[in-house]
Image (cartoon, rainbow, N blue to C red):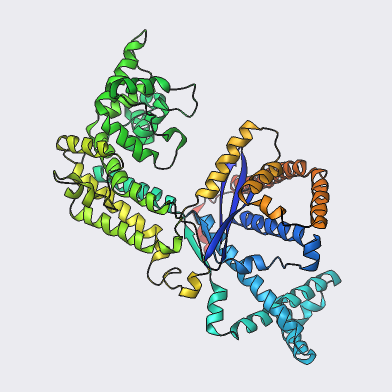
Length: 596
């Protein structure tokens, strides 16, 4: 099975690829490294998979072992039984492209085998039928007769491919049903981390709608400096500033992360914040990393803000009082303002409760040390939805005086941050809208969970797998391996700015793919071949070619878009010219005469 992810680094798209090799009930994880691309479209990503695997097979087939035991590159897609990605539309299209690649490769191989064993009369008849079909598609015999020799050559190649595919389809349909089912296995699954992330987003969207739907004033807007200055003028300027500004728990946790733990360690409070809290509570801790948008950090940040609310306010007051002018900067003022807003605190409590009750226990299961198979997680996702429904029906499971982790958390285990749950319990009596807002939030998460866990639905791709098909599929529950690989690449690129991508990949593959163990099994001729191949690659300037291809692709895109804009402008100017030279009829009698 395959998995992949992409990111931008220094304004260049990069893709990471991993595979799981499944054999006799076990699976081995292997990385295929990282490649750059000129864009991140699904077609380009599919091309990247095809190029990467073709290179692997080419290196093997030109080796001494490969020459005696060659491997068909098409066996890679044929043996692919699933793919793990995130839930974006381009990733769904990519997975469909991989599945089409699998089917086409399978039919080609079966067709070639059938072709080799077919009698000449049978083959001639099929070629004749496919030729007639090609003539019809081209527009008939007259059009066919006008084709050039080059065009006819291309048509001959197309006919040959169609013959092979036809034979392949016929061979596939002739298989017993059980064999067809095994050959067709392909499951596309979505990363569980992204499921939880999107559920949080869906819940928060419903939460922001809750205030307006109930004619309540929502959380105070935390405007940036420019919008706040514009709002002071009133009228339309104020309305536009309010429209562009947001407030609430997510905004506050992002701002707090920028203030207390900025991703640039020269900005924000950093260690001053940590030392203050060590002195106050006897514990040295770091604020959750919302400044780097780390997964789950908004929920953890909400828990920290709720738990240490009085100390957070006190610390900000100390920051203000330490200054010569005794005034906060705009960021500090916004964080303090958010911590004073009752409705913002309501949202913080809700996000903290959801993080404790659902997110943390869910992630502990999907990221467990046993690396669960994604296709086995259907019951877990049903439990998630059932648990959320129970809390919607009875919010006292989280808000009541007798609420506990036994009935409050997804797994019935202890809260991840018991002090955060206790803090919410203390604040709850002063937050009149907490219950209704919590229900609205959970309704949004439930709707999103249902949508993003669709692969587990009854009658879906996973639910309909037979036992034999299940044995062919192992998909990781999350896309951590690819995201971690891309993160390591970003850090490594900062530490070794001149290291080539090939060098980085070589080190990573050697470390993670047990390459040393494999090399120890190779004979002397194969080792000699590998050393020779390395010298060829090392002297080919492949890294410079990679950079040059990216620059050329960027220039081509710019040229295409420039030409498109110029064409649009020409059409617009032509329409404007027609309007300028148009002479309207102003004589009503002449107009009437024209009609008669």
